Every structure is written in structure tokens, then in C-alpha cells.
Amino acid sequence: MDALGLARLQFAVTTIYHFLFVPLTIGLALTVAIMETIYVRTGNPAFKQMAQYWGRLFLINFAVGVVTGIIQEFQFGMNWSSYSRFVGDVFGAPLAIEALLAFFLESTFIGVWIFGWDRLRPAAHAFAMWLVAFGTAISAFWILTANSFMQEPTGYAVVHGRAEMTSFGQLIGNPQLWVEFPHVLLGAFTTAAFFVAGISAYFLLRRQHVEMFRSSLKIALMIGALSSLLIALNGDAQAKHVVQAQPMKMAAAEAVWHTQSGSAPWTVLAGIDQAARRNTFALQIPGVLGFLSGTDHFQGIDQLQRQDVRKYGPGNYVPPVAPTFWSFRIMVLAGGLMILIAWYGIYTLARRRRLEDRSRYLRLLPSAIALPYVANTFGWIMTEVGRQPWVVYGLQKTLAGVSNTVSGAEVATTLIGFTVIFGLIAAADIYLLVRYAKAGPDLHEPSPDLPLGTAAVL
Image (cartoon, rainbow, N blue to C red; front, side, top):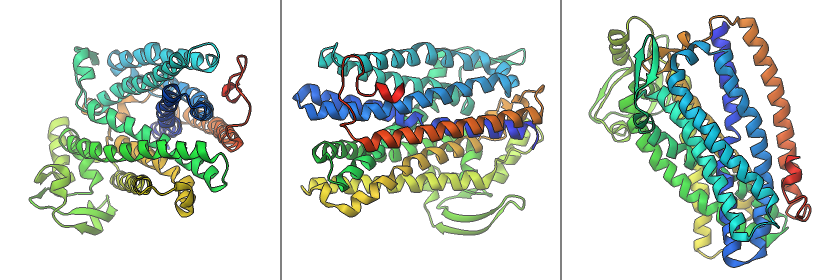
């Protein structure tokens, strides 16, 4: 592979790895805030113990996520300096705001939350975690503001060969941002819900700390059921928007080579031959594509390629179709399974059945922790691979964004180094999460000097 291919692979590896931690951080912050608020409202010490236990796991995940996230920004200067020079005047603003406002907010109040158990009133302490939850959410907002510009540039002008911001309002009012941000946020809530549900099920199966983990599971199922359903509805709106804003991406995601009009079929499975520009086989449902896409004239890859050549000049504007097609379906499948699993739990609760008596269902939940991670990962693969060959859609190609002074050997060296380091960090993270999760809520009692959760970070 050349420097471009290796740089893309390195950014993909580090981004996917980093995003394993982001959704859980966002979702657990909200979940812990809800649990502690219930403690403040009811005075029930079980909910305080619950907030401390899940807060401990939140702190482990947050610490590792910060370490992996730092690597992301270094790559802009290392492997993507041409991209950084082109878009830095636009891209830099939301990233700076994220670091100076959102990250400092959440970091400051995480410290308040850790060391404030015996120093603050319960309501003030709970409010600190709500500020942490707010900080994680707006951190995602500013990162996605930057990403949305790459997907659908707004509020800019190209001056002397560089993109310069002309309207901050248009930048944060980007239509892509307002379908992408809710999708990511709801995905984060779902991730935390299944994480809490899976660990709670583990303890319920062993009849340990039944009262606490029964309540944890109920809270997780309510959050998971609502957020998984809302993410499906939001995903439908996002897909309809992408059909208009990035039609080539959606044509690849549906493996539609020729323009379809009227009641076009939706392809469930397909064998894709990109070289021959055709599908070798297709399992289809008649008349569904128009409903899903919101249009009765779905443009195909061949037509869009001709349009892009006329608009941007000679070149291949077709993204890798098979990865885009299959990643989209894996994401949807994982999302559908999460809806079924979460709502079955809600159905059981509505019938006033005890969840701890549903052993088959409880045995399923620890494995279901993987589902939101699968959906999150393949959703981003579809989003970023489907945008190729553009690094900024319609403005700069990926080939033009890579650093022209970095050799393939140099990128390969850092790729191997980052992969090894991230592997070690992953092993440490898994070890800590498993150890502290299995230890249960009685690992040690909180104290003014070493509150519950501090040891997990130190």
C-alpha cells in the first residue's frame, strides 16, 4: 500500500478504536446522573450505591477514551497536513470549542463528582454529574459539527485555494449535523443501556445484589427501549437526507447501479461486482425502495458517475460499493435486534413479571452488549467509506488531502506502533472493566479521601 492507503487505514483503525469508548462515556454519564437523581429524590441509599458502582466503570472508560482521542488530532498534522491547510480555518473552530469548552467542562466536574461525595450536598453532587453528561453531549456536538462539514460543506468560501468560514451560524445550522448529532447521541444512550443491562443480568443470574441490579436493569431497559426506537426513526430521516445531499453514498449503500423510478425494489442481500458494475444476484422486496428513500426517482451509480464527471471533471466518483452496502445492513440488523431485545424486557415489566425469573432472557443480555458496538462501528464505516473519493464532499479529494512529505514506510511505522499501543490499552481497559464489574458494588466503601471510583482511574 502507498502512503495514501496506509494513512487512510491508520485513521480508520484509530478512529474505530477511539469510538468504542465515546458512546459508552456519553451514555453512562446520563445513566449515572439519572440514578443519582433518583437517590436525591427518594433518599434510598441503594441508588447512591448504584450511581457509585456504574460511575466507577464510567471513569475507567472515560480515562481510556481520552488517551486514544489525543492520537486523532496528531494525525491531522502528521498524515493529513494538506487537508489541514485546506480546511483548517473552518475545521479548527469547532475542534477548539470542543477542547476549551466541552472537554474542560466535563473534566472539571468529573473531578468534582469524584471528590465531592462527602463534601457536597446530594443535590449539588448530582448536578455535577448532570454537567458531566451535558459536557459529553456538547463535546460530541462540536466534533460532529466538524464531521458534518466534511459530509455537507456549509458556511464557507474558497479563498486562495483554501476553505474559509463565512458564517458560523451556517456551520452549526448544517442540515447534516442536525440529523447526524441525534443519531450519534441516541446511539450512545443505547450503548450504555445495553452495557448496564448486560452486567446487571450477569449478577441477577447469580442471585447477587438482586435489588440493586434489578433496579439497574429496569432503568437500562427503559433507556434502551426508548433510545433504540428513536434512533431507528432518526435513522430513517437521516437516510432520506443523505439521498438528497450525497446521492452517490446512498446509491452505493443500496447497490443501485441504474436509476430506479416508481415502485422500485429494496435489495436485502446482493452479490456485488464493482468491476462489472452489476449485482451477480439480489434478494429484493418489491416496491420498498421508494418508501425508504422518500423519492420515486432513485438515482443509480452509473447516472451519478456521469453527473459527477460533468461537474467535477474526469475521475472515478464511485465509492467502494460492497463495504458501503454491507456495513449499512449490518448496522440496521444490529439496530433491529436491539429494539426487539429492549422492548421484550419492557413487555415483561409491563406484565408485572420478575426479570430475574427470565433466565433465558438474562443469559442473552451479556452477549447483547456487543450489538450497539457493532451498530456504531459499521454505521461510521458506511458514513466514511461511502463519502469516498472525497475527504470534504465536493471540495477536496482524499488523494489531495494526504501529506505529500510523508512516505509509505513512515506511515507504516506509526500504523504498527499505534496498533500495538492501542492493543495494550485495550487489554488494560478490558481487564479493568471486567475486574471492577465482577467485583460488584461492595469492592470498597467510599471515603472522603478515596471515593468509590477513584481507584479505578489511579
